[in-house]
Image 1 (cartoon, rainbow, N blue to C red):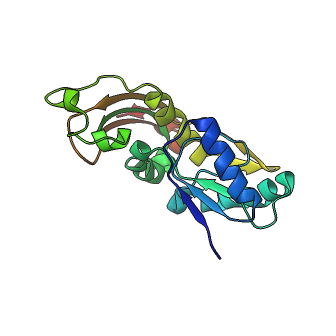
Image 2 (cartoon, rainbow, N blue to C red):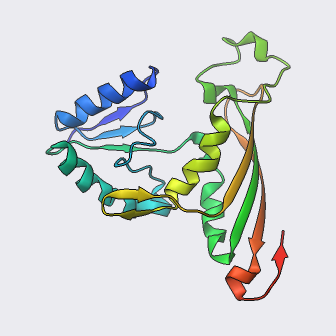
Length: 191
């Protein structure tokens, strides 16, 4: 079976239309783009965590009248480094998380040579990146009910996302707080 891996650099609406056209033509689409990350019937998958969200594909195909085609997306690149670790800690009463990401220029689809203003510089705010880092994990940890995604409510995540003058690879600093009362029944919190 053929499939399309979508990693286009286009505006979101154009990307949505192209991906939907492929899926409508019977070709599965695995997308690296953000255009469908918040589409209600499109699963955002980290396979080790939420492969069961693939059940949305049946609902997606049925509601859109697609025979073999469908769309699945991957999450934002910066959360892929810390969400799997946090996932392993959720059963211990993970309550709040403070994250700082230090993202390479490759995350913006650039190189240091094509972005000379990044030399010896940082950008302390990446528009839209903090919201993605705070909300996308809640979709990944959410549940599927009646063909719809229900977001998780915990942990509460607060992020700061910084662009740094590094070619490739993101760094992340994570501070987690656990609610032991929720986990153990004892009235105590710990960092």
